[in-house]
Every structure is written in structure tokens, then in C-alpha cells.
Image (cartoon, rainbow, N blue to C red):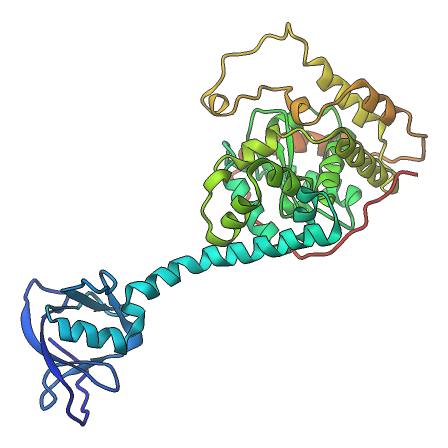
Length: 403
């Protein structure tokens, strides 16, 4: 049944249509008219309803060849009108222009035009500042775009299970509080994945991902602090964004940020995990980490020890186990952190040559043991503590310098 009777005055061209209420299979003829208030369904001297023009949608946008229109309300429960009248179709296209094919094309094209406008602005900034293109684009990206990009990159990683053991997270938070009291990454923005791959990733949007395997490989909290500090150096220099610009191009990044379609970024997480930064970028990240450790009174020597131990894993004679299903999707093997973070002897020697200064342990043995169990199941008496995708406030931070 039609509902909400409305009285209106005036005489308008009347047409006929077939009406279904969306609740039953019944189809019945009705009078319709295009009034000042909207599409009137029913005779003017009887019970009728008005569909405001802005609420009307159509199954196929109106073009010059349209001979039938099937109309419905966006906010209704399935009621439809089917009209086979060229005069009505031409008239409703004037009263409700959004039903036209040209308007639909414009609606679909707007996200792409927005992408183009942003891309043009970024390119103009590159030439105006005379900077390295990838680095300039990375620095010119809005913080919100970086955050969205980081969220989408996380979703492309081959492993999604996050480690949330309460005691383990508390120990990790204690390390971050000593190492990064002022950013650029907070403990909430460091995600631990239950992933048997020895690696740590800096991601767009001020994020860091640690794998279960790299935590298990660490001999002490200071080693892990060095790894986190190094990744924070990449974050502070926008290396992840610059790396993706070089790998997939500016247009693909802008498209993902504005339209949400992955496009060329369908494997962005894998790209970042295997992406080799330049030697100068690695040295800058090392210096950033060493500066953080000095300010936090953290011993830097274990950082060199960790890299040296990882370097020894690259022996050609190393036996590799049969790859798991997740490993088959991701060709890197344990120890291949060096593919994206080349830990050569020069870098290790550079870290070992840092002058000594007063240091204090970050964690006691029991806390470090809890950190090692960050991917373990929660005790039954403890509630889960999921790590959400963060909303990041933009607070520029100056990179600490090694003195």
C-alpha cells in the first residue's frame, strides 16, 4: 500500500507507471506526475506520496537512447517505479539531473580528478624545491594521506595475526618509553606480527612492524632497542614513503590514498620488507638510533652484536627448512633481514666504535622473558589487548644527532 498521503495543488503532466512496493510480488498501475515538490505517485485527488527529487535513484543512468526507466528511493525499502514513456524520461532528467549518464560519469571521475590535482601539486613542489623526486613527494604528502597509506600497507602483509600478550606489550612499551620518549613513533604504533621471519619494517604513517622471529632472535632488550631505533630513523626520514614512490610511482600511491583501491600496491608490504635502502639512508638510520640510545642511556654495543649475528646467518651453507604456506607467499627466509638492511662489516665497526657513556639496563630478566612471549596465548584471567590501527597526530620531531 502507498502511504504518507500528501495534498498538493496545481495541475501537472500526468504519466502512468508500474509500481511495486518491495514487500510483495504485486505490480499495479499508478498515475505519476512531476510536481514542484518531487515525483508524485497517485492521482492528485486521492491518497498519494511524494518522492523528493534528491532521494530518487535509477538503475541505469538516463542517456539519449533510454526507453525505460526504473526508479526507486535511496531511503526506501525496495519500492520501484517502471516507466516506459520517452516524454516522462526526458522530463524527469530535467527535474532530477543526477539521474543523467553525464552526471554519473562526473561522480565516478571526481576521485580520479582529485588524485590528479594532488599529483600535480606534489610534482610542482618537487621542481620548486629542486629535491630528489621520491624524497620530495614523501615529505610533501599530507599526514592524513600517510596514515591512510600506512593502514593499507599493513593490510597487504602476508601475515596479519597481531601479538597482544599483555605482559609482552608492557615490556615493549617500557623499551619504547626509554628509547623514544618524544617520538616519532609511540608504542601504540609498533605492531608485532606472529611471523616467523626475522625482520623489522618501517611503514608510512609513522608505523613500525616487528616480527615474532626478530624478537625471539634478540639476546637482550638493548639489541631490540637498536633495531627499533634504526626503524624509527627510517620513519623520521620518510624512507618508507620514498621507497614506495620509487617502486610503484606517484600515481599509484595517490590512487590508493584517495580511492582505496590497491592497484599496484597489492603487495606493498612485501615490497617494503624486501626493499633495500641506500647505504647513506642506512647510515642515517644508524646515527638516529645511536643518538636515541645515547640520550636514553642505552648501551649501543648490543646493536652491533645483533647485526653481526644476523650477518653470520647469511652463510651459503645454511640449511633452509621446507617453506611453510606463508613463506611460499613471501620468498624471504629467516636471517634475510639483511636483504633490506645490509649489515656489512663497516656498519658494524662504526657502531662498535661509538665512545662509551654511562648506561642503564632497560629491562630486568623477567621482563625480557615476558617480551619473548609476546605472541603467546593470553592467560585465561586476563582480557585481550588488541593493537588497533592508530590515529596519528602530526608532531614534527628533530632527528637526534650522534655526538
